[in-house]
Amino acid sequence: MFRLVQWLLVLTLCVGVAFESRAQDGVQSPVLVIDFERAFAESAFGRRLNEEVEREGNAIVAENRRIEAELSAEEQRLTDQRADMPPDQFRALADAFDQKVQRLRAEQDAKAEALGSRGEESRIEFLQAARPVLERLMRETGAAVILERRSVLVAVDAVDITDRAIERIDAQVDPDPARGPAEPAQDVAPQDDVTPDALVAPTQP
Image (cartoon, rainbow, N blue to C red; front, side):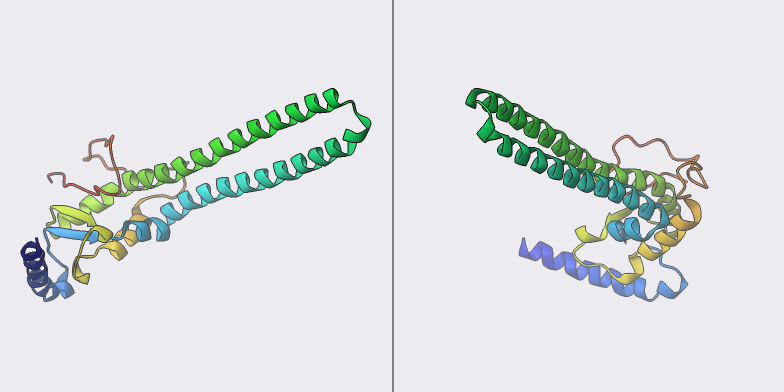
């Protein structure tokens, strides 16, 4: 295992020397890397998706605070009425209040869980929109694959296309959902199982 790691490091460094010498003219590499999270966070389309999720999250937080305040006030009213109320009547009201609390808690937990899923869905939506841009970069550089930067042990800066990808995505993917992508890809088949971990496999020119 150690020898394999050594070999991979030597191979990466040797390839890096060759690519660095061509970086000024534009790298030609079978492997490219991208910082997907940075592309998602810094591109206009990714920011718009992030802002949507953030707005939904803020709305849930505000709703939680409102519900908490209302339940606290209702609990205090119930406590204040206890001395003037028959025990069985108070118990019935207390049980109803507990059920209400449990129901509201379950509803808010479901909303928070759905928001987490929405965050993952937004990344998939971003990748689907950015995929044609990344594939064009692959064809231009002769690459066969794009890897997520965080999954790569060592890579030279010349094969990192994050900055170029952000620039291209901003130019070619419209952040306005009403208009959609400015340049829809006609040579890319629909992808049903797109995830950020398996970024891009090439389509033949």
